[in-house]
Length: 389
Picture 1 (cartoon, helix red, strand yellow):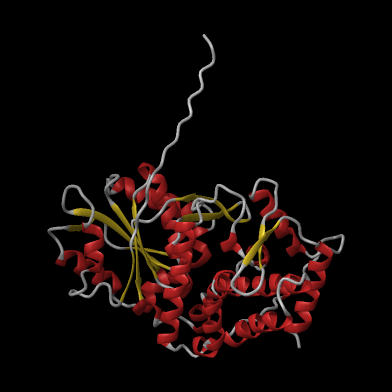
Picture 2 (cartoon, rainbow, N blue to C red):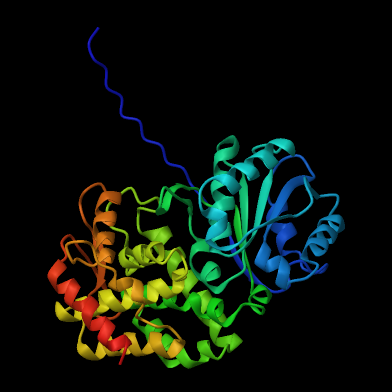
């Protein structure tokens, strides 16, 4: 028999709403019920709700409010288990322990492909819950309720889930779009000052490479973000989320099968910095440092002007970020900065060919396949001088 060759092509469409609201569990707020009941199938729709321990601590009684909300929609919705509390931060996504526990919950509750998992928390919890949900029955319906600025304007609206594993950041993970994202601005009111501004660096990231008008807005309101002005922050969250959704929708590569990862501008060093610090440097702070470092490099290469770099650096600093962390100064035995290993981490992740995004003027970008390590080393040293000035 001769060889036979079939060319199989499958197109799968995904659609999910991203909704901005307040007080999502108020009896008169139908947003969450509407999101869950838009699904076809037998009623009531069954769900497990996971709550970040930080959210539970700062929003006293949220478990009772969740139970009351589901009881108020008893004909359409049903809690398969009482609301489950999970640790927040990197703890919940470090290794597989909590993901395995969630999968056991799904088994115990006899969830099916038409069941829902609702995740309320920061980006790390959303990552962990989304990862577990994407594995069980090859994918449960995930509804995200991000509780931080960083989660509402960035990670919560995307299509990725991941766990840290074997000493690496996001070593294992899945691409699995959510059923819906509900951004409740009231969840932000109890954030610490640090968590309040953490998402601002991701807004700078996407503005620098995609939207010069948004960049001007960020620079003009940088002190407003630091001072916790609600209106300015809500405008930041909505526009940043729009830009992330636009990229996912129009890039032609939402699951990153290609090599370029433009939304990871500033992240090769940020991910390494987080690991080097044992995650004591948060993601937003690490990204701010990464943006400053790559913008400084871009300036040395002639891709940004000195005034553009100054606007980036001053904007991030005014918003409340430090662009220098002592972990950046750690060196290998041969004297090389350890953080530079993040370049090779990205190269391996992308299959051996390096593609790192740099700005090419404010609001525009380019992909670079080689980095001058000596020049980047000088930029790290320069960043230290600036940070200690």
